[in-house]
Image (cartoon, helix red, strand yellow):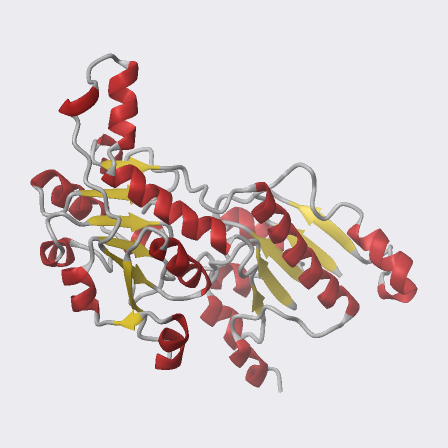
Length: 332
């Protein structure tokens, strides 16, 4: 079996070092050293990914594009594993019709991402970045700076999945009323969490802070643009710790600069890294470098989840984290 790692979020230490030897020691005949190997590439383009994955049995990917063209060029891929929770760099539909399961690393750092959303909301509402910069430049001190705390207000969550659910008690710790929009969830989930289920329009109108924990797909691309910012409170803050293209960055900058909303906090961007993004020039948008899930514990959890799934496929055991369960109807 040929395992191709297209790119690694954690190059050192190598998370797959010695894995085949470990499995061979435990399961003897599970590994054939003449045929089984793990190879590493640094794919940044579709063409590079095609070349690297032609003979792959298993593809482990981080941000390399696993597109329809890439899969068309492969011979017999048995599994694609995304080294993370989101999998929008993978054409899941193209994989599904070819009978290829797609696996991810769910819940590896949900609490970290949820808390980072809170951190960005607080940093934006308390004007932390500009205050820090002003103090260092000796251009501002004390009462001439104004903060707009969000505690006691309404915390709106878009996407009440694993991460969104972790954010609920954190926001309540600030004395906030939590509401959520997630059209894919049954009402009983909201009831279990004691969170009010609202329409998207009510979310926009009521929230003092809206935090995005939703997946990226055709329906959620530019979920927040000009019309949505007009409907939000002028005092509201928008935070995105999910996927960059959920937010129209040009519209966001216009909204913040014109006073349609107060401020924003971003950990993700339409293009990454965001070298030319207009958000970098706005003093009322707090930015962090897509590191919400970057704690040491989250890193180790991600490595463990991916390694365990890889072990299962190498041993011929049932997989645990398949995101396209419908794939099995194409395999019958």
